[in-house]
Amino acid sequence: MNVLLLGSGGREHALAVKIAQSSCLGKLFTAPGNPGTAECGQNIPLNISDFEAIGNFIEENSIEMLVVGPEDPLVNGIADYFADRPVSVIGPSKDGAMLEGSKDFAKDFMTRHGIPTALYKSFDKSQLQQGYDFLEKLAPPFVLKADGLAAGKGVIIVDSLSEAKASLKEMLDGKFGAASSRVVIEEFLRGIEVSVFVLTDGKSYKILPEAKDYKRIGENDRGLNTGGMGAVSPVCFADRAFIDRFEKKIVEPTIRGLQKDGIYYKGFIFFGLMNCGGEPYLIEYNVRMGDPETEAVMPRLNGDILDLFDGVAKGTLDTKQCSICPETAVTVVLVSGGYPEEYRKGIEIEGISSIKGNKVYHAGTSENGGKLLTSGGRVLTVTALSGNLQSALDSVYDSVRKISFDGCYYRRDIGKDLLNY
Ligand code: AMP
Ligand code: GLY
Image (cartoon, rainbow, N blue to C red; front, side, top):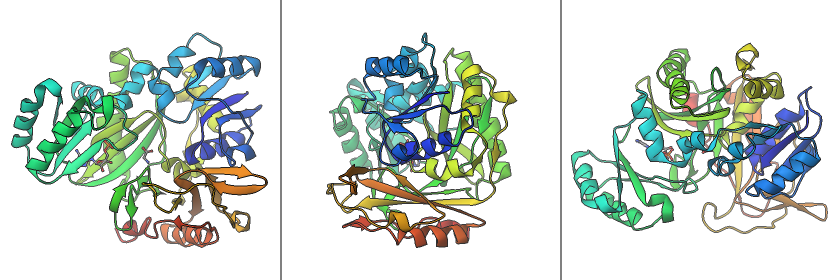
C-alpha cells in the first residue's frame, strides 16, 4: 500500500517511523515532511492546504491511504474532499473536525451526549453583558476560550473577575481574530491533566496509550504555554479504574454521539482529560494525535499501524489486534532559545549521530549543504523507552545532553512529578 502522510512536525516523524515498519507498506511519501521523515520515505513539497495538488499527487502515485497529521486540513474538509475518490483518509470529516474547530460545538456535543465536562456558556459580541453576568456567578479562577482555532493560544485563565471581564471584551473585540468572535466561559476544573488517544472507524475503537504533556516553557510548569515541552507514557494516575471510567463515561458516549448525529469519523480522537479525584472530565477534543505525545505513544504501540489504519478505513477495526508495550516512554523537546516567543532559525545542530538506542524525532529542522539546521521553535524531540520511569528519564536526558545547538533549551523536569506520585 502506498501512503501519503501530511505534516512536518515531530508527530509526523513518529508516525512515519511507525508506518515505515509496516509489512503492508509500499511507498511512504510525506508532505511537506522534514529531514526525519525523509529517512522513512520520500518528502514531497506539497502545500497541505492545496487539496487539488494533493489529489493530483495521489492519482499520479497510486496512493491508497492519506494520513492527516495536523488539524487544519481536517477542519478545512480534506476528508470530505476525498470522500468519493479511491483513497482512504485517516482523519474525520469536516463535521467531525468541528469537535476541535469549535469549542462551542464541542461543549454542546458533550452536554447533549451526557459526557462529563465543566459547566459552560458561550457568548458572542452582542451578549457581552450576559457574559459579565455569567462570570459573576462563577468562582475564580475564570476560564475563557476562543471558540475557533487559535494555534493553541486561545485559552485564558485569570484569577480576578475584573481581569476576566476585560479579557472577555478583548476577545470578543477580536483579540484572536475570527476565532474569538464567540467565547466559551467555563467552570475551572481542579485536578491533574492527562491525554488519552483513541483510534476509531466510527463504530468500534481502540484505546491507545495515554500520555502526560508538559505545556509550559519553564520548569515546575511556569511561564508561557507552548505546543508541548515533553511527554510521559504511561501515566501512573491514569490507572485501570480511571481508564475504565473514561471508556464508559466518555469514549462510548462520544462514539455513540457521533453515530446519532450522523457524523462521519474515521481517525484519531485526542481526549484532553482532567482527573478530578479519580473521575475523568473532558476538557477538550482534538481530532488528531498530540505533539509531542505521539512521540511517546507510538513507541509503545506494538504491531502494525497500517493494519490498524486498514481496519479504520474498512470499518473492521474490531477485528484488529492492538497491543501496548508496558515499558515507559519519556519524550523531551529541545527548543530554540526564545521560544515560544521570538527565536532564531538556521542554527547548526550537532551530536545526533552519537545517540544510540533512543529515538530522535525531527520537528523544526532543515537540511542545507549536508548540515542540519534549526528551522522552528520546537526543533527536536528525543524519546527513551525503558523498563521504568527512572531508567527512561536517565536514558533520555543522557541522549539530550549529547545534542547541541546555539540557544538550545529543554526542561529538565519532565516526568519528575510522577516519580513519587
Ligand atoms: P484547551 O485548549 O481547551 O485544552 O485548554 C488549554 C489548557 O487550559 C488545558 O490544557 C488546561 O490546562 C487548561 N484548561 C482548559 N479548560 C480548563 C478548565 N475548565 N479548568 C481548568 N483548566 C482548564
Ligand atoms: N501537545 C498538545 C497538542 O498536541 O495539542
